[in-house]
Length: 372
Ligand code: OSB
Ligand code: MG
Image 1 (tube, helix red, strand yellow):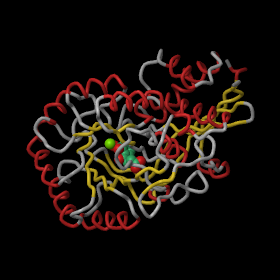
Image 2 (image 1 turned 135 degrees about the horizontal axis):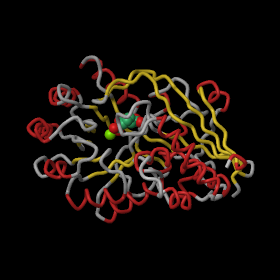
Image 3 (image 1 turned 30 degrees about the vertical axis):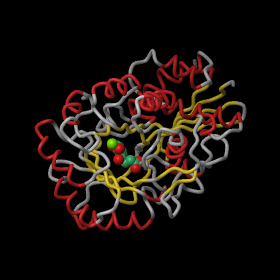
Image 4 (image 1 turned 90 degrees about the vertical axis):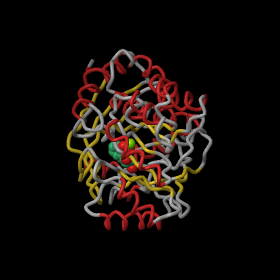
Protein backbone atom coordinates (compact mmCIF):
# COMPACT_ATOMS: atom_id res chain seq x y z
CA UNK A 1 0.00 0.00 0.00
CA UNK A 2 1.12 3.54 -0.64
CA UNK A 3 0.92 5.65 2.52
CA UNK A 4 -0.40 9.15 1.77
CA UNK A 5 -0.32 10.78 5.15
CA UNK A 6 0.33 10.18 8.85
CA UNK A 7 -1.26 12.20 11.66
CA UNK A 8 -0.37 12.44 15.33
CA UNK A 9 -2.88 13.87 17.80
CA UNK A 10 -2.27 14.55 21.46
CA UNK A 11 -5.45 13.67 23.37
CA UNK A 12 -6.63 13.87 26.98
CA UNK A 13 -9.60 12.14 28.58
CA UNK A 14 -10.75 12.67 32.18
CA UNK A 15 -11.31 9.54 34.33
CA UNK A 16 -14.70 8.89 35.91
CA UNK A 17 -12.78 8.05 39.14
CA UNK A 18 -9.12 8.69 39.99
CA UNK A 19 -6.65 5.84 39.38
CA UNK A 20 -3.95 5.40 42.03
CA UNK A 21 -1.05 2.94 42.10
CA UNK A 22 2.24 2.76 44.00
CA UNK A 23 3.46 5.23 41.34
CA UNK A 24 0.92 7.95 42.18
CA UNK A 25 -2.63 9.18 41.53
CA UNK A 26 -3.96 10.17 38.09
CA UNK A 27 -7.18 12.06 37.34
CA UNK A 28 -6.99 11.86 33.53
CA UNK A 29 -5.15 10.16 30.72
CA UNK A 30 -2.99 11.83 28.06
CA UNK A 31 -1.95 9.78 25.04
CA UNK A 32 -1.04 10.07 21.36
CA UNK A 33 -3.40 8.89 18.66
CA UNK A 34 -1.69 7.75 15.44
CA UNK A 35 -3.55 7.77 12.13
CA UNK A 36 -2.06 6.32 8.97
CA UNK A 37 -3.84 6.97 5.65
CA UNK A 38 -3.48 4.95 2.45
CA UNK A 39 -5.73 4.35 -0.54
CA UNK A 40 -8.71 6.00 1.13
CA UNK A 41 -8.39 3.92 4.31
CA UNK A 42 -7.32 5.10 7.77
CA UNK A 43 -5.56 2.87 10.34
CA UNK A 44 -5.66 3.87 14.00
CA UNK A 45 -3.08 3.26 16.73
CA UNK A 46 -2.63 4.54 20.28
CA UNK A 47 0.65 5.34 22.05
CA UNK A 48 0.21 4.37 25.71
CA UNK A 49 3.07 6.48 27.12
CA UNK A 50 1.93 8.70 29.97
CA UNK A 51 2.72 12.33 30.86
CA UNK A 52 5.44 11.34 33.34
CA UNK A 53 8.08 8.58 33.20
CA UNK A 54 6.61 6.56 36.09
CA UNK A 55 5.58 3.21 34.64
CA UNK A 56 8.55 3.30 32.23
CA UNK A 57 11.01 5.90 30.93
CA UNK A 58 8.79 6.91 28.02
CA UNK A 59 6.48 9.93 28.13
CA UNK A 60 4.02 11.38 25.63
CA UNK A 61 6.68 13.99 24.77
CA UNK A 62 9.51 11.48 24.17
CA UNK A 63 7.20 9.29 22.09
CA UNK A 64 6.08 12.31 20.05
CA UNK A 65 9.71 13.25 19.39
CA UNK A 66 10.79 9.73 18.43
CA UNK A 67 7.79 9.34 16.12
CA UNK A 68 8.31 12.76 14.52
CA UNK A 69 12.08 12.65 14.05
CA UNK A 70 12.80 8.95 13.52
CA UNK A 71 9.95 6.46 13.11
CA UNK A 72 7.65 8.40 10.75
CA UNK A 73 10.55 9.59 8.51
CA UNK A 74 11.80 5.98 8.36
CA UNK A 75 8.38 4.67 7.38
CA UNK A 76 7.84 7.34 4.73
CA UNK A 77 11.35 7.30 3.22
CA UNK A 78 11.41 3.52 2.93
CA UNK A 79 7.73 3.31 1.86
CA UNK A 80 6.96 0.76 4.59
CA UNK A 81 3.36 -0.29 5.06
CA UNK A 82 3.61 -3.93 6.16
CA UNK A 83 3.88 -4.14 9.96
CA UNK A 84 6.65 -6.76 9.74
CA UNK A 85 8.80 -4.49 7.52
CA UNK A 86 8.32 -1.58 9.90
CA UNK A 87 9.16 -3.83 12.88
CA UNK A 88 12.41 -5.01 11.26
CA UNK A 89 13.54 -1.57 10.11
CA UNK A 90 12.59 0.21 13.36
CA UNK A 91 14.87 -2.10 15.35
CA UNK A 92 17.78 0.14 14.41
CA UNK A 93 16.40 2.64 16.94
CA UNK A 94 16.97 1.49 20.50
CA UNK A 95 14.15 1.36 23.00
CA UNK A 96 11.05 3.57 22.83
CA UNK A 97 8.69 0.60 22.50
CA UNK A 98 5.52 2.60 23.15
CA UNK A 99 6.28 4.99 20.29
CA UNK A 100 7.01 2.04 17.98
CA UNK A 101 3.90 0.15 19.07
CA UNK A 102 1.56 3.09 18.37
CA UNK A 103 2.69 3.24 14.74
CA UNK A 104 2.78 -0.55 14.29
CA UNK A 105 -0.78 -0.81 15.64
CA UNK A 106 -1.99 1.78 13.12
CA UNK A 107 -0.34 -0.21 10.31
CA UNK A 108 -2.03 -3.42 11.48
CA UNK A 109 -5.41 -1.69 11.48
CA UNK A 110 -4.71 -0.30 8.01
CA UNK A 111 -3.67 -3.61 6.40
CA UNK A 112 -6.52 -5.49 8.09
CA UNK A 113 -9.04 -2.96 6.74
CA UNK A 114 -7.50 -3.23 3.30
CA UNK A 115 -7.82 -7.04 3.41
CA UNK A 116 -11.33 -6.63 4.84
CA UNK A 117 -10.46 -8.83 7.84
CA UNK A 118 -10.80 -8.26 11.58
CA UNK A 119 -7.41 -8.06 13.30
CA UNK A 120 -7.93 -11.26 15.27
CA UNK A 121 -8.07 -13.24 12.02
CA UNK A 122 -4.86 -11.64 10.80
CA UNK A 123 -3.18 -12.50 14.10
CA UNK A 124 -4.37 -16.12 14.01
CA UNK A 125 -6.53 -15.66 17.11
CA UNK A 126 -9.19 -18.18 18.01
CA UNK A 127 -11.17 -16.86 21.00
CA UNK A 128 -14.47 -15.22 20.03
CA UNK A 129 -15.19 -13.85 23.49
CA UNK A 130 -12.54 -12.99 26.04
CA UNK A 131 -12.78 -12.99 29.85
CA UNK A 132 -12.72 -9.56 31.46
CA UNK A 133 -11.18 -8.51 34.76
CA UNK A 134 -10.91 -5.13 36.42
CA UNK A 135 -7.90 -3.40 37.97
CA UNK A 136 -8.81 -1.34 41.04
CA UNK A 137 -6.45 1.34 42.27
CA UNK A 138 -5.56 2.32 45.81
CA UNK A 139 -8.56 4.09 47.38
CA UNK A 140 -9.00 6.73 50.09
CA UNK A 141 -10.41 4.15 52.50
CA UNK A 142 -11.00 0.42 52.90
CA UNK A 143 -14.74 0.90 52.72
CA UNK A 144 -14.43 2.77 49.41
CA UNK A 145 -12.40 -0.17 48.07
CA UNK A 146 -14.92 -2.76 49.27
CA UNK A 147 -17.81 -0.80 47.72
CA UNK A 148 -16.03 -0.56 44.40
CA UNK A 149 -15.19 -4.28 44.35
CA UNK A 150 -18.82 -5.10 45.15
CA UNK A 151 -20.06 -2.91 42.30
CA UNK A 152 -17.63 -4.37 39.73
CA UNK A 153 -18.49 -7.94 40.75
CA UNK A 154 -22.18 -7.12 40.33
CA UNK A 155 -21.44 -5.87 36.81
CA UNK A 156 -20.03 -9.33 36.07
CA UNK A 157 -16.24 -8.87 36.03
CA UNK A 158 -14.60 -12.28 36.41
CA UNK A 159 -11.71 -11.20 38.60
CA UNK A 160 -10.48 -8.28 40.64
CA UNK A 161 -6.91 -6.98 40.57
CA UNK A 162 -5.91 -4.84 43.54
CA UNK A 163 -3.07 -2.38 43.39
CA UNK A 164 -0.82 -2.78 46.43
CA UNK A 165 2.10 -0.94 47.99
CA UNK A 166 3.78 -0.94 51.42
CA UNK A 167 1.06 0.04 53.90
CA UNK A 168 -1.80 -1.03 51.56
CA UNK A 169 -1.19 -4.74 51.21
CA UNK A 170 -1.58 -7.62 53.69
CA UNK A 171 -4.32 -6.09 55.86
CA UNK A 172 -6.21 -4.97 52.75
CA UNK A 173 -6.00 -8.41 51.13
CA UNK A 174 -7.19 -9.97 54.38
CA UNK A 175 -10.27 -7.73 54.55
CA UNK A 176 -11.08 -8.17 50.86
CA UNK A 177 -10.67 -11.94 50.99
CA UNK A 178 -12.91 -12.15 54.06
CA UNK A 179 -15.63 -10.10 52.39
CA UNK A 180 -15.34 -11.90 49.01
CA UNK A 181 -14.28 -15.47 49.89
CA UNK A 182 -14.90 -16.97 46.44
CA UNK A 183 -13.83 -14.18 44.09
CA UNK A 184 -10.84 -14.46 41.81
CA UNK A 185 -8.30 -12.00 43.22
CA UNK A 186 -4.80 -10.93 42.27
CA UNK A 187 -2.51 -8.04 43.18
CA UNK A 188 -0.12 -5.71 41.33
CA UNK A 189 2.67 -3.78 43.10
CA UNK A 190 4.18 -1.91 40.11
CA UNK A 191 7.61 -2.55 41.54
CA UNK A 192 6.98 -1.08 45.01
CA UNK A 193 8.90 -3.76 46.96
CA UNK A 194 12.40 -5.21 47.27
CA UNK A 195 13.83 -8.45 48.65
CA UNK A 196 13.86 -6.76 52.08
CA UNK A 197 10.05 -7.09 52.01
CA UNK A 198 10.13 -10.87 51.56
CA UNK A 199 8.30 -11.46 54.83
CA UNK A 200 5.35 -9.25 53.82
CA UNK A 201 5.16 -10.79 50.36
CA UNK A 202 5.17 -14.33 51.80
CA UNK A 203 2.18 -13.38 53.96
CA UNK A 204 0.18 -12.87 50.75
CA UNK A 205 0.24 -16.65 50.19
CA UNK A 206 -2.62 -16.92 52.69
CA UNK A 207 -5.21 -15.26 50.50
CA UNK A 208 -5.46 -17.61 47.52
CA UNK A 209 -4.36 -14.93 45.05
CA UNK A 210 -4.08 -16.00 41.42
CA UNK A 211 -0.83 -14.08 41.07
CA UNK A 212 1.36 -11.32 42.45
CA UNK A 213 2.25 -8.94 39.61
CA UNK A 214 5.58 -7.11 39.43
CA UNK A 215 6.59 -6.94 43.10
CA UNK A 216 10.13 -5.72 42.29
CA UNK A 217 11.72 -3.13 40.00
CA UNK A 218 11.17 -3.07 36.22
CA UNK A 219 14.82 -3.89 35.43
CA UNK A 220 14.92 -6.92 37.72
CA UNK A 221 14.70 -10.61 36.88
CA UNK A 222 17.10 -12.08 39.42
CA UNK A 223 15.44 -11.02 42.68
CA UNK A 224 12.08 -12.10 41.27
CA UNK A 225 13.56 -15.57 40.70
CA UNK A 226 14.74 -15.64 44.32
CA UNK A 227 11.30 -14.59 45.56
CA UNK A 228 9.43 -17.08 43.34
CA UNK A 229 11.35 -19.91 45.07
CA UNK A 230 9.97 -18.79 48.42
CA UNK A 231 6.35 -17.91 47.70
CA UNK A 232 3.65 -20.34 46.57
CA UNK A 233 1.60 -17.74 44.72
CA UNK A 234 2.69 -17.48 41.07
CA UNK A 235 4.57 -14.30 40.27
CA UNK A 236 3.50 -12.49 37.10
CA UNK A 237 5.83 -10.06 35.38
CA UNK A 238 4.65 -6.89 33.64
CA UNK A 239 7.28 -4.07 33.52
CA UNK A 240 10.24 -6.51 33.57
CA UNK A 241 9.27 -8.21 30.31
CA UNK A 242 10.30 -5.89 27.51
CA UNK A 243 10.84 -8.43 24.70
CA UNK A 244 10.67 -12.12 23.79
CA UNK A 245 14.31 -12.31 24.81
CA UNK A 246 13.66 -11.09 28.37
CA UNK A 247 10.64 -13.43 28.50
CA UNK A 248 12.89 -16.38 27.67
CA UNK A 249 15.43 -15.33 30.29
CA UNK A 250 12.72 -14.88 32.94
CA UNK A 251 11.40 -18.36 32.14
CA UNK A 252 14.90 -19.91 32.30
CA UNK A 253 15.61 -18.19 35.61
CA UNK A 254 12.23 -19.03 37.12
CA UNK A 255 11.48 -15.35 37.71
CA UNK A 256 7.73 -15.81 37.16
CA UNK A 257 5.08 -18.37 36.24
CA UNK A 258 2.80 -16.01 34.30
CA UNK A 259 3.43 -13.08 31.95
CA UNK A 260 1.25 -10.02 31.37
CA UNK A 261 1.59 -8.89 27.74
CA UNK A 262 1.05 -5.28 26.70
CA UNK A 263 1.78 -4.38 23.09
CA UNK A 264 2.86 -0.86 24.11
CA UNK A 265 5.38 -2.05 26.67
CA UNK A 266 7.09 -4.47 24.27
CA UNK A 267 7.01 -2.43 21.05
CA UNK A 268 4.02 -3.83 19.19
CA UNK A 269 2.03 -6.86 18.12
CA UNK A 270 4.90 -8.73 16.48
CA UNK A 271 6.95 -8.69 19.67
CA UNK A 272 3.81 -9.54 21.69
CA UNK A 273 3.22 -12.61 19.52
CA UNK A 274 6.85 -13.69 19.99
CA UNK A 275 6.39 -13.45 23.76
CA UNK A 276 3.11 -15.34 23.51
CA UNK A 277 4.87 -18.09 21.55
CA UNK A 278 7.92 -18.46 23.80
CA UNK A 279 5.57 -18.69 26.80
CA UNK A 280 3.40 -21.25 25.06
CA UNK A 281 6.43 -23.41 24.19
CA UNK A 282 7.36 -23.38 27.87
CA UNK A 283 3.80 -23.95 29.18
CA UNK A 284 3.58 -20.52 30.78
CA UNK A 285 0.15 -18.88 30.43
CA UNK A 286 -0.12 -15.20 29.51
CA UNK A 287 -2.86 -12.58 29.74
CA UNK A 288 -3.38 -9.11 28.33
CA UNK A 289 -2.68 -6.10 30.50
CA UNK A 290 -3.94 -2.58 29.91
CA UNK A 291 -2.67 0.99 30.09
CA UNK A 292 -6.01 2.77 30.65
CA UNK A 293 -6.46 2.98 26.88
CA UNK A 294 -9.21 4.78 25.02
CA UNK A 295 -11.52 2.54 23.01
CA UNK A 296 -9.01 2.53 20.16
CA UNK A 297 -6.15 1.03 22.17
CA UNK A 298 -8.65 -1.13 24.06
CA UNK A 299 -9.96 -2.64 20.79
CA UNK A 300 -6.38 -3.41 19.72
CA UNK A 301 -5.83 -5.24 23.03
CA UNK A 302 -8.99 -7.29 22.58
CA UNK A 303 -7.79 -8.67 19.24
CA UNK A 304 -4.38 -9.56 20.69
CA UNK A 305 -6.04 -11.40 23.59
CA UNK A 306 -7.73 -13.86 21.18
CA UNK A 307 -4.47 -15.81 20.71
CA UNK A 308 -4.67 -19.28 22.26
CA UNK A 309 -2.18 -18.94 25.14
CA UNK A 310 -4.04 -15.95 26.65
CA UNK A 311 -5.47 -17.85 29.62
CA UNK A 312 -6.63 -15.49 32.38
CA UNK A 313 -9.19 -12.70 32.63
CA UNK A 314 -7.54 -9.60 31.19
CA UNK A 315 -7.23 -5.99 32.35
CA UNK A 316 -9.73 -5.25 29.62
CA UNK A 317 -12.86 -3.66 31.00
CA UNK A 318 -15.77 -1.67 29.58
CA UNK A 319 -15.11 1.83 28.23
CA UNK A 320 -17.30 3.31 30.98
CA UNK A 321 -15.11 1.82 33.71
CA UNK A 322 -12.64 4.64 32.95
CA UNK A 323 -14.34 7.16 30.65
CA UNK A 324 -17.78 8.79 30.61
CA UNK A 325 -17.43 9.27 26.86
CA UNK A 326 -15.07 7.11 24.81
CA UNK A 327 -13.54 7.92 21.40
CA UNK A 328 -15.49 5.09 19.77
CA UNK A 329 -19.17 4.44 19.23
CA UNK A 330 -20.62 2.16 20.40
CA UNK A 331 -18.27 1.96 23.42
CA UNK A 332 -16.82 -1.38 24.57
CA UNK A 333 -19.01 -3.19 27.06
CA UNK A 334 -18.96 -6.45 28.96
CA UNK A 335 -21.61 -9.17 28.93
CA UNK A 336 -23.36 -10.15 32.19
CA UNK A 337 -20.99 -13.17 32.19
CA UNK A 338 -18.00 -10.82 32.38
CA UNK A 339 -16.74 -11.31 28.84
CA UNK A 340 -16.08 -9.01 25.91
CA UNK A 341 -17.29 -10.05 22.46
CA UNK A 342 -14.48 -9.74 19.93
CA UNK A 343 -15.43 -7.37 17.07
CA UNK A 344 -15.88 -8.97 13.67
CA UNK A 345 -15.73 -5.85 11.51
CA UNK A 346 -12.52 -5.15 9.54
CA UNK A 347 -9.42 -3.91 11.40
CA UNK A 348 -9.95 -2.91 15.03
CA UNK A 349 -13.66 -3.39 14.34
CA UNK A 350 -14.82 -0.35 16.32
CA UNK A 351 -15.81 3.08 15.02
CA UNK A 352 -13.61 6.05 16.03
CA UNK A 353 -15.68 9.24 16.38
CA UNK A 354 -13.78 11.99 14.59
CA UNK A 355 -15.82 14.83 16.10
CA UNK A 356 -15.17 13.53 19.58
CA UNK A 357 -11.45 13.02 18.84
CA UNK A 358 -11.18 16.61 17.65
CA UNK A 359 -12.76 17.83 20.88
CA UNK A 360 -10.33 16.02 23.17
CA UNK A 361 -7.15 16.69 21.17
CA UNK A 362 -4.94 19.74 21.67
CA UNK A 363 -2.07 19.30 19.21
CA UNK A 364 -2.04 17.78 15.76
CA UNK A 365 0.81 17.22 13.33
CA UNK A 366 0.53 15.98 9.76
CA UNK A 367 3.33 14.21 7.86
CA UNK A 368 3.47 13.65 4.11
CA UNK A 369 6.08 12.26 1.73
CA UNK A 370 6.89 15.75 0.43
CA UNK A 371 8.21 16.66 3.91
CA UNK A 372 11.11 14.20 3.72
O1 OSB B 1 0.55 -2.10 35.95
O2 OSB B 1 -0.98 -3.06 34.88
C1 OSB B 1 -0.45 -2.02 35.28
C2 OSB B 1 -2.61 1.00 34.35
C3 OSB B 1 -1.63 1.88 33.95
C4 OSB B 1 -0.32 1.52 34.03
C5 OSB B 1 0.04 0.25 34.50
C6 OSB B 1 -0.94 -0.65 34.88
C7 OSB B 1 -2.30 -0.26 34.84
C8 OSB B 1 -3.40 -1.10 35.29
C9 OSB B 1 -4.79 -0.86 34.70
O3 OSB B 1 -3.31 -1.93 36.15
C10 OSB B 1 -4.98 -1.59 33.43
C11 OSB B 1 -6.22 -1.18 32.68
O4 OSB B 1 -7.32 -1.42 33.15
O5 OSB B 1 -6.09 -0.61 31.57
MG1 MG C 1 0.99 -4.17 36.06
